[in-house]
View (cartoon, rainbow, N blue to C red):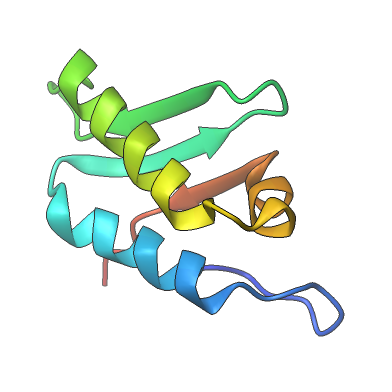
Length: 85
C-alpha cells in the first residue's frame, strides 16, 4: 500500500504498475529505490533476490516511468512493500 499526502503528486499508472509487480512476483516483499538509482530488493525469508528478478524489476520500473521524468523522480528515495492482511 502506498502512503499518500494531500499535496504530493500522484502517478496512478506507476502506482498500479508497482501493485502489478507484487502480484507477478510472489516472493517479492518490497524494494527501495535509492537516490543513486540503486534498487534494494527484499524477498521472503530464506529466499534471495536472483539476478533475474532484479533485472525484471528494474526493467518494469523503467517501462513504468518511460517518458515521464516527474514519475521517475518521484520513485527515488521511496520504499514499496507488499501488504499482508
